[in-house]
Image (cartoon, rainbow, N blue to C red; front, side):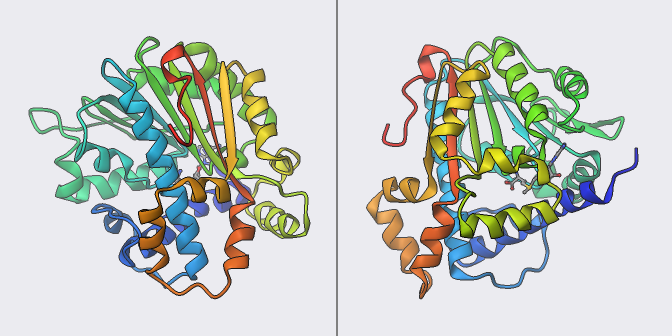
Length: 314
Ligand code: SAM
Protein backbone atom coordinates (compact mmCIF):
# COMPACT_ATOMS: atom_id res chain seq x y z
CA UNK A 1 0.00 0.00 0.00
CA UNK A 2 1.32 3.44 -0.77
CA UNK A 3 0.04 6.58 0.84
CA UNK A 4 -0.44 9.91 -0.84
CA UNK A 5 1.08 13.11 0.52
CA UNK A 6 -2.42 13.98 1.65
CA UNK A 7 -2.61 10.79 3.71
CA UNK A 8 0.79 11.59 5.23
CA UNK A 9 -0.52 14.98 6.33
CA UNK A 10 -3.54 13.32 7.90
CA UNK A 11 -1.37 10.78 9.69
CA UNK A 12 0.73 13.64 11.10
CA UNK A 13 -2.35 15.08 12.82
CA UNK A 14 -2.07 12.23 15.29
CA UNK A 15 1.39 13.36 16.37
CA UNK A 16 0.01 16.82 16.85
CA UNK A 17 -2.93 15.65 18.98
CA UNK A 18 -0.70 13.39 21.08
CA UNK A 19 1.80 16.19 21.71
CA UNK A 20 -0.93 18.60 22.73
CA UNK A 21 -2.41 16.02 25.09
CA UNK A 22 0.94 15.25 26.67
CA UNK A 23 1.64 18.95 27.17
CA UNK A 24 -1.68 19.51 28.94
CA UNK A 25 -1.21 16.39 31.07
CA UNK A 26 2.25 17.60 32.16
CA UNK A 27 0.74 20.90 33.20
CA UNK A 28 -1.82 19.10 35.35
CA UNK A 29 -4.96 19.55 33.25
CA UNK A 30 -5.89 15.90 33.63
CA UNK A 31 -4.22 12.64 34.62
CA UNK A 32 -2.92 10.18 32.06
CA UNK A 33 -0.21 7.75 33.16
CA UNK A 34 0.24 6.40 29.63
CA UNK A 35 0.50 9.31 27.22
CA UNK A 36 4.22 9.81 27.81
CA UNK A 37 5.00 6.41 26.26
CA UNK A 38 3.59 7.60 22.97
CA UNK A 39 5.36 10.90 22.55
CA UNK A 40 8.68 11.81 24.05
CA UNK A 41 9.33 15.49 23.99
CA UNK A 42 6.83 18.30 23.72
CA UNK A 43 7.11 22.06 23.53
CA UNK A 44 4.75 24.01 25.70
CA UNK A 45 1.51 24.92 23.95
CA UNK A 46 -0.50 28.12 24.40
CA UNK A 47 -2.91 28.17 27.36
CA UNK A 48 -6.00 28.32 25.15
CA UNK A 49 -4.83 25.19 23.32
CA UNK A 50 -4.32 23.35 26.61
CA UNK A 51 -7.72 24.41 27.87
CA UNK A 52 -9.35 23.43 24.59
CA UNK A 53 -7.81 19.96 24.84
CA UNK A 54 -8.98 19.68 28.43
CA UNK A 55 -12.59 20.35 27.40
CA UNK A 56 -12.25 17.86 24.54
CA UNK A 57 -10.87 15.03 26.65
CA UNK A 58 -13.18 15.76 29.59
CA UNK A 59 -16.27 15.89 27.39
CA UNK A 60 -15.41 12.62 25.64
CA UNK A 61 -14.82 11.00 29.03
CA UNK A 62 -18.06 12.31 30.46
CA UNK A 63 -20.10 10.66 27.71
CA UNK A 64 -18.00 7.50 27.75
CA UNK A 65 -18.94 7.12 31.42
CA UNK A 66 -22.60 7.86 30.74
CA UNK A 67 -22.52 5.08 28.17
CA UNK A 68 -20.81 2.62 30.54
CA UNK A 69 -23.30 3.37 33.33
CA UNK A 70 -26.16 2.39 31.01
CA UNK A 71 -24.73 -0.98 29.94
CA UNK A 72 -26.21 -4.03 31.62
CA UNK A 73 -23.69 -6.46 30.13
CA UNK A 74 -20.11 -6.15 28.96
CA UNK A 75 -19.89 -3.68 26.13
CA UNK A 76 -17.57 -3.06 23.22
CA UNK A 77 -15.82 0.14 22.20
CA UNK A 78 -14.80 0.93 18.63
CA UNK A 79 -12.31 3.77 18.41
CA UNK A 80 -12.26 5.16 14.85
CA UNK A 81 -9.00 6.88 13.88
CA UNK A 82 -7.68 6.03 17.33
CA UNK A 83 -4.22 7.52 16.78
CA UNK A 84 -2.23 7.13 19.99
CA UNK A 85 -5.29 7.52 22.23
CA UNK A 86 -4.64 6.02 25.68
CA UNK A 87 -8.31 5.48 26.56
CA UNK A 88 -8.01 1.68 26.65
CA UNK A 89 -5.41 1.83 29.44
CA UNK A 90 -7.15 4.58 31.36
CA UNK A 91 -10.37 2.56 31.36
CA UNK A 92 -8.56 -0.64 32.33
CA UNK A 93 -7.53 1.13 35.55
CA UNK A 94 -11.06 2.18 36.42
CA UNK A 95 -13.65 -0.24 35.02
CA UNK A 96 -14.29 -3.89 34.14
CA UNK A 97 -17.25 -3.06 31.94
CA UNK A 98 -15.52 -3.23 28.56
CA UNK A 99 -15.47 -6.70 27.02
CA UNK A 100 -13.80 -5.79 23.76
CA UNK A 101 -11.93 -2.69 22.65
CA UNK A 102 -11.27 -2.30 18.93
CA UNK A 103 -9.01 0.43 17.59
CA UNK A 104 -8.79 1.37 13.90
CA UNK A 105 -6.39 3.69 12.11
CA UNK A 106 -4.17 3.72 9.03
CA UNK A 107 -1.78 0.73 9.15
CA UNK A 108 1.25 3.01 9.49
CA UNK A 109 -0.28 4.50 12.68
CA UNK A 110 -1.40 1.20 14.19
CA UNK A 111 2.00 -0.36 13.40
CA UNK A 112 3.73 2.42 15.32
CA UNK A 113 1.27 2.18 18.18
CA UNK A 114 1.71 -1.60 18.30
CA UNK A 115 5.47 -1.20 18.37
CA UNK A 116 5.29 1.23 21.30
CA UNK A 117 2.93 -1.11 23.17
CA UNK A 118 5.25 -4.08 22.74
CA UNK A 119 8.25 -2.10 23.94
CA UNK A 120 6.66 -0.87 27.17
CA UNK A 121 5.80 -3.34 29.89
CA UNK A 122 3.32 -0.96 31.55
CA UNK A 123 1.28 -0.86 28.34
CA UNK A 124 1.76 -4.46 27.36
CA UNK A 125 0.82 -6.02 30.69
CA UNK A 126 -2.64 -4.48 30.50
CA UNK A 127 -3.50 -6.08 27.17
CA UNK A 128 -2.02 -9.54 27.59
CA UNK A 129 -4.07 -12.71 27.54
CA UNK A 130 -4.03 -14.77 30.69
CA UNK A 131 -1.02 -16.65 29.42
CA UNK A 132 0.69 -13.32 28.87
CA UNK A 133 0.50 -13.28 25.11
CA UNK A 134 -0.40 -10.89 22.37
CA UNK A 135 -0.70 -12.10 18.83
CA UNK A 136 0.52 -10.17 15.81
CA UNK A 137 -1.25 -11.21 12.63
CA UNK A 138 -1.01 -9.36 9.30
CA UNK A 139 0.48 -6.41 11.15
CA UNK A 140 -2.47 -6.19 13.55
CA UNK A 141 -2.24 -6.71 17.27
CA UNK A 142 -4.72 -9.01 19.01
CA UNK A 143 -5.38 -10.10 22.54
CA UNK A 144 -8.53 -11.28 24.36
CA UNK A 145 -10.15 -7.90 24.80
CA UNK A 146 -8.03 -5.55 22.71
CA UNK A 147 -7.54 -5.35 18.94
CA UNK A 148 -5.43 -2.77 17.15
CA UNK A 149 -6.21 -2.94 13.46
CA UNK A 150 -4.80 -1.14 10.44
CA UNK A 151 -7.34 -0.06 7.86
CA UNK A 152 -8.55 2.81 5.72
CA UNK A 153 -11.82 4.11 7.11
CA UNK A 154 -12.74 5.37 3.63
CA UNK A 155 -13.13 1.78 2.51
CA UNK A 156 -16.21 0.26 4.11
CA UNK A 157 -15.40 -3.27 2.97
CA UNK A 158 -12.08 -3.10 4.76
CA UNK A 159 -13.65 -1.69 7.91
CA UNK A 160 -16.19 -4.51 7.99
CA UNK A 161 -13.52 -7.15 7.48
CA UNK A 162 -11.32 -5.69 10.20
CA UNK A 163 -14.18 -5.37 12.68
CA UNK A 164 -14.95 -9.04 12.10
CA UNK A 165 -11.28 -9.94 12.66
CA UNK A 166 -11.47 -7.92 15.88
CA UNK A 167 -14.32 -10.13 17.08
CA UNK A 168 -17.00 -7.46 16.93
CA UNK A 169 -20.42 -8.47 18.22
CA UNK A 170 -23.64 -7.20 16.61
CA UNK A 171 -25.58 -7.57 19.84
CA UNK A 172 -23.30 -6.14 22.54
CA UNK A 173 -23.89 -2.54 23.58
CA UNK A 174 -21.49 -0.60 21.40
CA UNK A 175 -19.76 2.72 21.83
CA UNK A 176 -18.24 4.25 18.70
CA UNK A 177 -15.76 7.09 19.13
CA UNK A 178 -14.73 9.52 16.42
CA UNK A 179 -12.51 12.18 17.97
CA UNK A 180 -11.26 14.52 15.25
CA UNK A 181 -11.42 11.82 12.59
CA UNK A 182 -14.48 12.04 10.34
CA UNK A 183 -13.33 15.45 9.17
CA UNK A 184 -10.58 13.67 7.21
CA UNK A 185 -13.07 11.54 5.30
CA UNK A 186 -15.06 12.70 2.31
CA UNK A 187 -18.67 13.34 3.38
CA UNK A 188 -19.98 10.38 1.39
CA UNK A 189 -17.38 8.02 2.90
CA UNK A 190 -18.10 9.27 6.43
CA UNK A 191 -21.84 8.90 5.81
CA UNK A 192 -21.46 5.35 4.49
CA UNK A 193 -19.37 4.39 7.50
CA UNK A 194 -21.80 5.85 10.04
CA UNK A 195 -24.82 4.43 8.23
CA UNK A 196 -23.25 0.99 8.38
CA UNK A 197 -22.47 1.28 12.09
CA UNK A 198 -25.95 2.57 12.95
CA UNK A 199 -27.53 -0.25 10.96
CA UNK A 200 -25.35 -2.93 12.55
CA UNK A 201 -25.63 -2.10 16.25
CA UNK A 202 -29.12 -1.99 17.71
CA UNK A 203 -27.86 -0.63 21.00
CA UNK A 204 -25.16 1.91 20.40
CA UNK A 205 -23.87 5.38 21.05
CA UNK A 206 -21.63 7.42 18.81
CA UNK A 207 -19.57 10.33 20.10
CA UNK A 208 -18.16 12.71 17.52
CA UNK A 209 -15.85 15.61 18.25
CA UNK A 210 -15.05 17.89 15.36
CA UNK A 211 -15.09 21.38 13.92
CA UNK A 212 -18.33 23.30 13.29
CA UNK A 213 -19.50 26.82 12.37
CA UNK A 214 -16.60 27.27 9.95
CA UNK A 215 -18.57 29.65 7.74
CA UNK A 216 -17.26 32.85 9.41
CA UNK A 217 -13.91 34.63 9.20
CA UNK A 218 -12.28 32.67 12.02
CA UNK A 219 -13.66 29.46 10.55
CA UNK A 220 -12.19 30.32 7.18
CA UNK A 221 -8.70 30.27 8.68
CA UNK A 222 -9.43 26.93 10.36
CA UNK A 223 -10.70 25.52 7.08
CA UNK A 224 -7.58 26.64 5.25
CA UNK A 225 -5.52 24.89 7.91
CA UNK A 226 -7.56 21.74 7.57
CA UNK A 227 -7.29 21.81 3.79
CA UNK A 228 -3.53 21.96 4.12
CA UNK A 229 -3.82 18.76 6.13
CA UNK A 230 -5.72 16.88 3.53
CA UNK A 231 -9.36 17.36 4.37
CA UNK A 232 -10.51 19.71 1.68
CA UNK A 233 -13.68 17.80 1.16
CA UNK A 234 -15.46 17.90 4.47
CA UNK A 235 -15.60 21.70 4.33
CA UNK A 236 -19.22 22.32 3.57
CA UNK A 237 -20.45 20.07 6.34
CA UNK A 238 -18.16 21.74 8.87
CA UNK A 239 -19.55 25.17 8.05
CA UNK A 240 -22.86 24.23 9.61
CA UNK A 241 -24.05 24.62 13.18
CA UNK A 242 -23.92 21.78 15.70
CA UNK A 243 -27.68 21.23 15.37
CA UNK A 244 -27.15 20.41 11.67
CA UNK A 245 -24.58 17.76 12.67
CA UNK A 246 -27.17 16.20 14.98
CA UNK A 247 -29.83 16.21 12.26
CA UNK A 248 -27.42 14.53 9.89
CA UNK A 249 -27.02 11.67 12.38
CA UNK A 250 -30.77 11.08 12.32
CA UNK A 251 -30.71 10.72 8.54
CA UNK A 252 -27.91 8.14 8.91
CA UNK A 253 -29.99 5.81 11.05
CA UNK A 254 -29.57 6.91 14.66
CA UNK A 255 -32.77 7.32 16.76
CA UNK A 256 -31.63 10.29 18.71
CA UNK A 257 -28.90 12.87 18.34
CA UNK A 258 -27.83 16.04 20.06
CA UNK A 259 -24.91 18.36 19.60
CA UNK A 260 -23.38 21.32 21.40
CA UNK A 261 -20.58 23.68 20.65
CA UNK A 262 -17.69 23.38 23.07
CA UNK A 263 -18.46 26.68 24.81
CA UNK A 264 -21.78 25.16 25.88
CA UNK A 265 -20.01 21.96 26.92
CA UNK A 266 -17.43 23.95 28.88
CA UNK A 267 -20.12 25.86 30.76
CA UNK A 268 -21.89 22.62 31.62
CA UNK A 269 -18.81 21.17 33.34
CA UNK A 270 -18.87 21.20 37.15
CA UNK A 271 -17.89 24.57 38.58
CA UNK A 272 -15.06 23.01 40.63
CA UNK A 273 -13.45 21.49 37.56
CA UNK A 274 -13.56 24.73 35.65
CA UNK A 275 -12.15 26.67 38.59
CA UNK A 276 -9.30 24.20 39.01
CA UNK A 277 -8.40 24.29 35.34
CA UNK A 278 -8.66 28.06 35.16
CA UNK A 279 -6.16 28.38 37.98
CA UNK A 280 -3.51 26.32 36.16
CA UNK A 281 -2.43 28.96 33.67
CA UNK A 282 -3.10 32.62 33.09
CA UNK A 283 -5.21 33.16 30.01
CA UNK A 284 -4.91 36.68 28.65
CA UNK A 285 -7.03 36.07 25.65
CA UNK A 286 -10.29 34.60 26.83
CA UNK A 287 -11.70 35.89 23.52
CA UNK A 288 -9.48 33.51 21.59
CA UNK A 289 -10.61 30.54 23.66
CA UNK A 290 -14.23 31.53 23.11
CA UNK A 291 -13.60 31.59 19.37
CA UNK A 292 -11.97 28.18 19.46
CA UNK A 293 -14.75 26.76 21.62
CA UNK A 294 -17.51 27.98 19.35
CA UNK A 295 -15.81 26.34 16.36
CA UNK A 296 -15.76 22.83 17.79
CA UNK A 297 -18.73 20.62 18.55
CA UNK A 298 -19.52 17.44 20.38
CA UNK A 299 -22.26 15.30 18.90
CA UNK A 300 -23.83 12.30 20.62
CA UNK A 301 -26.03 10.01 18.53
CA UNK A 302 -27.69 6.88 19.89
CA UNK A 303 -29.78 3.86 18.99
CA UNK A 304 -31.79 2.02 21.61
CA UNK A 305 -33.87 3.25 24.53
CA UNK A 306 -31.20 2.75 27.19
CA UNK A 307 -28.99 5.39 25.65
CA UNK A 308 -31.73 7.84 24.70
CA UNK A 309 -31.26 9.97 27.82
CA UNK A 310 -27.53 10.54 27.42
CA UNK A 311 -27.21 14.28 27.67
CA UNK A 312 -24.98 17.13 28.68
CA UNK A 313 -26.60 17.44 32.08
CA UNK A 314 -27.65 13.84 32.61
N1 SAM B 1 -8.67 10.14 17.77
C1 SAM B 1 -7.31 10.46 18.15
C2 SAM B 1 -7.29 11.59 19.14
O1 SAM B 1 -8.26 12.37 19.19
O2 SAM B 1 -6.30 11.73 19.85
C3 SAM B 1 -6.46 10.85 16.93
C4 SAM B 1 -6.95 12.07 16.20
S1 SAM B 1 -5.94 12.54 14.83
C5 SAM B 1 -6.36 14.23 14.70
C6 SAM B 1 -6.79 11.83 13.44
C7 SAM B 1 -6.54 10.34 13.27
O3 SAM B 1 -7.44 9.81 12.30
C8 SAM B 1 -5.13 10.05 12.79
O4 SAM B 1 -4.53 9.08 13.61
C9 SAM B 1 -5.36 9.56 11.38
O5 SAM B 1 -4.37 8.64 10.94
C10 SAM B 1 -6.73 8.93 11.47
N2 SAM B 1 -7.39 8.85 10.17
C11 SAM B 1 -7.78 9.87 9.38
N3 SAM B 1 -8.29 9.41 8.22
C12 SAM B 1 -8.25 8.06 8.29
C13 SAM B 1 -8.63 7.00 7.41
N4 SAM B 1 -9.15 7.26 6.21
N5 SAM B 1 -8.44 5.74 7.80
C14 SAM B 1 -7.89 5.45 9.02
N6 SAM B 1 -7.51 6.41 9.89
C15 SAM B 1 -7.67 7.69 9.53
